[in-house]
Amino acid sequence: EVKLLESGGGLVQPGGSLRLSCAASGFTFNSHPMTWVRQAPGKGLEWVTSISAGGPTTFYADSVKGRFTISRDNSKSTLYLQMNSLRPEDTAMYFCAKDLRMGATIDVFDMWGQGTMVSVSS
Amino acid sequence: DIQMTQSPSSLSASVGDRVTITCRASQSISNYLNWYQQIPGKAPKLLIYAASSLQSGVPSRFSGSGSGTDFTLTISSLQPEDFATYYCQQSYSIPPITFGQGTRLEIK
Image (cartoon, rainbow over all chains, first blue to last red; front, side, top):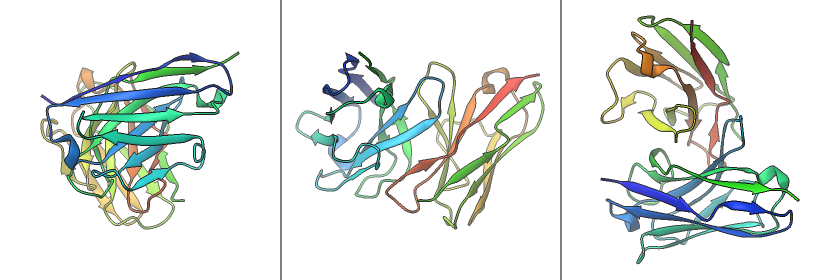
């Protein structure tokens, strides 16, 4: 069974940092691109960042570029999101998601974790 | 960036109804269009990918169509568990990947 389990969320002050993790199991983690998507309370889905299967290729939304860093440890089947210089508008549920297809193309998300909540407030 | 616009934003329907949700892209995206269902408090679930391919395990009452800029998601006969919010998503031109604003399907 494919599972994605996020952790690391919490309450942080503006300007602070958090590191989210997404532990994967049940599939060949190193063959699939991975993505973080967030959802502010009561709002829609917003793509944040994606990483290719091998890890060298990354993409970021303009809203987080330069502040967030996506990475993966294929030996641990774990995806990470390092979030620095956090702002109140980063408050959201953060989901990790697995790409349906193997390879480099970031395309369609067939499995999602349950999410981890990040709240940025003083 | 490619903008995705869904209509309607909300919809009331009854069990057994046939429902259609529309998604329009700001430029042609071929068939790089996916549909997700989200029940409140839960993670999104993939329903349809590549505009018309039914994801494994998804009931056949869900179907998708379209190409270019105009796409539809159809539920042929609404079931109680289908009342949720639906999102379209394009992956034709990235970054960024973009989602529609969502269509909330409520019980009439």
